[in-house]
Image (cartoon, rainbow, N blue to C red; front, side, top):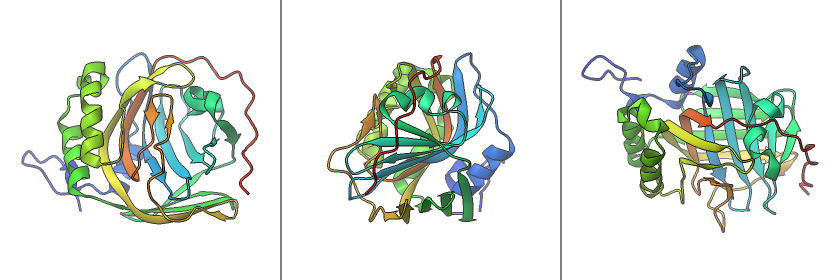
Length: 256
């Protein structure tokens, strides 16, 4: 249930992940600016004890004109693959593809079973279920996100100050809300609402990824650090202008 604030506004602290995703998809709006901007939701990252890591981006609005979904996968050897539902030049590989394999897939499906459980599938290849929850730490970060003026989310100084605080409050390892991507463009992240991934399971190409848990060493792609505890978000991202990727996508890593 969404509670009402003192001015009649919906209190973001009590909005469920499905409500947030549904609201964003029904009214996809971009932040103002002339840079490359995206609005959406997804799993910032979910680590698994065996060394794997999964992420989801469902960007329902894009200044490049094409909404998209991507799944990020790290294998136990530390090799990354980004699965994308659209051309890589208008999705995450535009910024991260120089250090990952890239694979175009026909579709990435996102299905909400209830307000707190979401399934992500790629045909018969990926079956990933996340159970989400709100904690005092995620509520604090969501309250901060709701109270931060839009202009502040575009300030490198503000984001630089918020980054270590977010990592400390969420206890998810290092978090950087601004920095440079492996392909060169800089990024600014605005996770306006945050939840914890409290349970779930994942199977990719017949391989069970096992139990969730922190990696031996925190993973990162350029200045973008993947959390050591599963986090789900709704928010925005912006990047300085990128040139389309010119490298041919690498073959997907052997998962056996």
